[in-house]
Length: 524
Image (tube, rainbow, N blue to C red; front, side, top):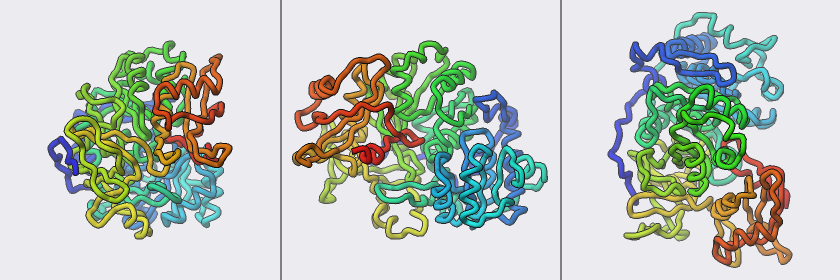
């Protein structure tokens, strides 16, 4: 077992709202809390808190409170913060929904979460409305923030002037949010994260991610995803930084906002790192205000991190977590230049980790160098309460001693530095050897002609599983399959060589930046 190298931090026994807003100082109230990156419109902390209270009051007036779940289908716009924290302020549970979901997927999540209210925006109304109709949710219970005929709007609710309700619940057990995750395998399940889980993770994250009230944070990673929810929305609010919202990633808009808003922190996923390192457009914009680029959601290779750092003249760091851990468990602190950028760094305060072999025995770190790979297990106050209505899945994920089994393969050093090798279920078995796709992807991305890449296991002519690379070339680049395979072969062990190459226009990825390997497998 490895304990955090940091001393424990205090975790207040309070609600998320009390933790984030309860000690706002008078001099902070007129600070900018939110900036609409598309329009430049600003919201101060005074305005944000006022709107949250009014929205919570409007929900309470409609009978929504402790024990109720409210669906939130919304991209990154300033109103998200009002509505999300208004739901929590009212004592209800927010189930945040992927903005790319179909009507069927939205309805499935709402039904599973027992949510009879849905909040959305007009561009997403067609699928929201179809989902509501499937479940018999009336138009009055489908709130369209920017307004739509027949539905209440944010303006309508705030103008009612209801005071925020007095609510009472135990922060340690009351579910604040219900995002959905596949866990290590299977269909998406409701992840029950309590107020204490979220408060703990923000308190823990302040150690490795040292935002302050002079920072301007660009928020392109979705708030509906736990990474955006905790590390961007909640942490930025807690540290009184200005949060600049962006509803979806577009490289030109991303670079424009960086230049115009003088953003100091960029929270990204690895696909954005690839663009920052390789795309010619980057040189046309002023990125001089950027101090830190912080990557999460999927492993970031050290050479790619170094390329971003050199091009933007900034610090690049990464962290690790999962929805079931609220999400952060590891970070590379900004002031630790001695830690390998390919690693996910150190355990957060109040967090324990261990690695186990296939037989369940513990893998110990040697005195020098990394340990053997093993499944990463986590224990700490950020670990979820469990999966909603799924005691079986909860028991598979969290053992009797409170250890959460991540399904990720990692190594660790005696100094407490962890590195994620790959997902257990994504390892390729080639002639008895285990091959990690992430390792091969890092090698592929190091080639100057390759813009993006992904690797899966695929059958060869004999039906044996071999590493197959999907490759996106840079514009006007000339590279054939033999060249790709030769490049990889020069950098890996013989059993890790890429055996099949397919050139594609893009690599399918989730909104949080993870490669959708199931989509690639469907191609064959």
